[in-house]
Length: 129
Length: 188
Image 1 (cartoon, one colour):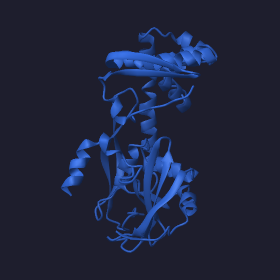
Image 2: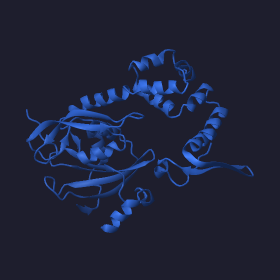
Image 3: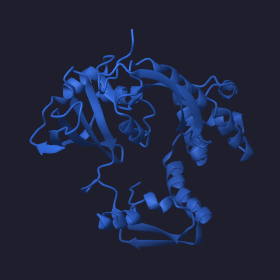
Image 4: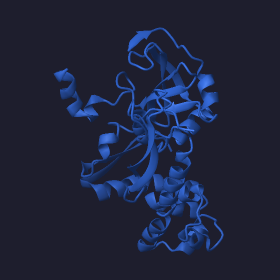
């Protein structure tokens, strides 16, 4: 995925559309990750987004999707706090106006990621790369 | 009208049945078999028309509510009567009888889970959340945890001027510390 400036979208537009049926969908990997935060279904994730309460919201990065069918579409990624947890979420808008939430997980890097001391085997994984 | 995949616009979409695991606090995970859309073009799965999640949500809710009698039985086993629970929480008597029959709200189930997690909270509620009851809970609850879950538990108290420090030490035998920071501070 190419990276560039951003954000490209007005987050409040996504928040508004989350309460409207058929305008926002969550990809399966993001849904699976969201279960770790207690969001069991797509409906529950969208209900949360529609509240629009993202504590300590920070724009993390933006870029373009590099695979079909949405190649070239811009995405925005944010991090925010929910209780004691930090969440990284990324989303984009398709050519037909449908929003896609593609990521919803713990940040992979930075001060909000899981400390390596708590995941010792990840050190080995990173050394292998 | 056929359902379209919201991720790739394909109409090559079918409804399949999948089994998913959903955690139920203090119980075994619920394994729920439910319908979902599958796109045979991009292999995405999900509720493509915002109709299927309603049924799934209800099934998950039912599985959670079904855990209430087990939570109440757990409290009975450690000597907490339902009458005491209702009295301590200022609930109308016989409320828990309704809970046992599955007539329990989300809020009441959340409350019940807190009580099951830490029955000592009932003592605090029973004492009107008085300062003494809260202090007693905050001091003795960590001590109880350390006594139950550590080998060679120890407690030391330091007093420097107006500052009082309480330090618990022990070899933790559960894996609970993997999610904790090295040092936790709290102020009463």
